Length: 300
Image 1 (cartoon, rainbow, N blue to C red):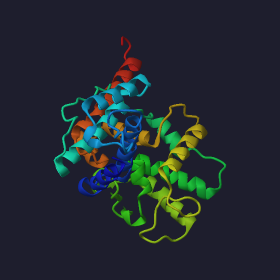
Image 2: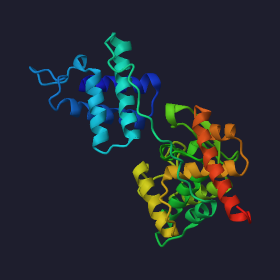
Image 3: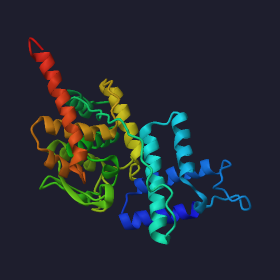
Image 4: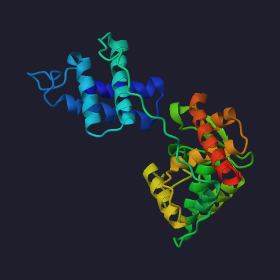
């Protein structure tokens, strides 16, 4: 089954054009399922000791999901694991006519949580927070925060940017590494462009196809490094809201909506394939309006 998982995820990357992060997530989730199956289930061939995918039944999957819930896994995690399992068996069904034991299995309902966002003042404080690091690191970190918030990028999109993707004259960024590898143009503000220019000036001339966001040694920065930078800057700015780099993307969308931007435009800038995904920010906006009303109205 391990070999089949490799074939499946390879096909996923080529046929569906899934991102590397998505492919890696599928691999991890399916290998976790394999680890469970190897613990004495009837899906393991008694002679070879390896998993036989044709022996897997719906009960194996149900018991696995139940064990995850008993072990404290969130419903979102369980839903994601089941989605990977169903995608794998659907691939087997289409590619080789194999039986699909989970085609009718339903995912557990997941409570929809509102995205965590920063207030506009806190966002400015985060972006403009100064520190005692050397100037190159400070300029790089400022550029990271400015671009994440200015263009509403995913972290993988930020770290995948090359200098050729930025049109300073038009104030646009070409995003080539979003989900599904769908290219899109996103406006970027002048403060973010100024931060990028300052960072480029500090690092010297760069080729058009060289990465924008790098370590101080010049290698492309990882998503984990960006997460650590944002966490450190939150502490320096004295902000207690536990925001992530993706939270700056949420903040971008929420602040745009509060300022009157229409959902369709925000959908295009975020690269959402469905407007339903973007509509969750309306709930955040309504919460903001209710809070403003509560503070301002004398009889609220």
